[in-house]
Amino acid sequence: MTTTTRIRSALVTGAGRGLGRDIAGLLADRGYRVMITDLDEQSSRTAAAEIGRGALWAAVDVRDRRQVDEARDRLVAETGGVDVWVNNAGVLLTGPAWEQTDDQRRLMLDVNALGTINGTVAAIEAMRARSAGIPGTGATGSGGHIVNIVSLAGISAVPGEAVYAASKHAVMGFSSSTAADLRLAGVDDIDISCICPDGIWTPMLFDKLEDPQAALSFSGVLLQSEDVVRAVGRVLESRRPVTAVPARRGALARLGAAFPRLASALLPLMAAKGRRKQRTLLRTQGSSRS
Image (cartoon, rainbow, N blue to C red; front, side):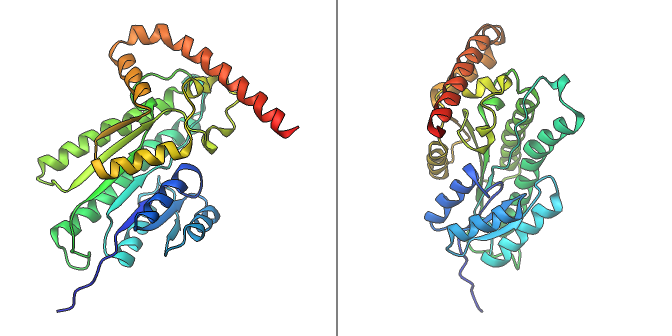
């Protein structure tokens, strides 16, 4: 009987640039064979070439379950299974819900919430199949770890980002409920972790410096991509269900969710602080270009 040595593998969505690209690099550094997926084919291909070490790539619209499954199936065929799946793809459009178009609202809900659901379900199917020893699925090893990149907007109210916050609250509810469903089904070797960062200085915020509706994303210490990557690294080891980055802002977000009247009083002050940070960054960028 021939046994096949299975390669540890990971898939990261929205990994053609920014945070997703950096998370994929972390996983490759840790010995995983990584699949880069992104809506943009060229950025997926380029990121995989830069990471090297056999990195795979695929152009994937996370809203399309078929495309997500096809990427997963290719990774399983190449490596024998899926050990880590990071749902990172996301879209942020700001403004009151009533000022956004139907298409804008649907885009955020579909990419952020449905995309994460599609990825999580695809990962669970592969991880359960391997754990159960189904032939052709690389039955060595068991289980896996799903990491969902959420946001502090998934914990508390965020004025100016209501639909975005709704999509991230959906991810939090889905993730914790699905983790509970796994345990009730007797599946103890698949974990789901949510990482909830504050505003991150990545392409998602690059064009938001003059957008007052995005002010709350700038009201804390603006994170760098490596801050969140380090949190991912820690979560891969601890398998902690929910991690806020930074922890202090996570505590404030939870406090605001528990006491909404207090949050309503404090949020305008935080938004004003965020607008000051936006203006400072605009001046800094202007002076650096002159």
